[in-house]
Image (tube, rainbow, N blue to C red):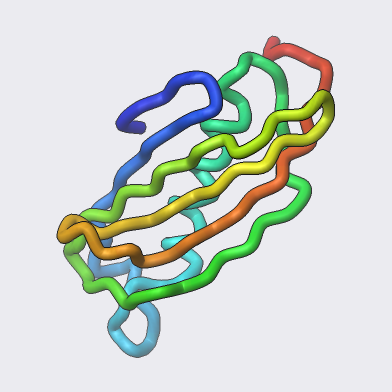
Length: 112
């Protein structure tokens, strides 16, 4: 976790050697998990429970093992029960690796 405020989060991770697929590239599931973590942090940043309704990802560029990836989640719209987030994942060179969108269901419950 690099930054967290209402409706926004930024997280980062270094791609370790065990995070690659059979072709030696960072596994798409690892990239998705990083974006999902940013989405969850931003969605729950208002102090109320938010859970995912849907997520999509578009892989735009390959990364390499050892790269430091940053995922940034930005709240696009927050309604009473749902909220939409855009999540971008970039490498340490500033290249856009993936673009994601997440829809969250906002429960009317705070955290325990």
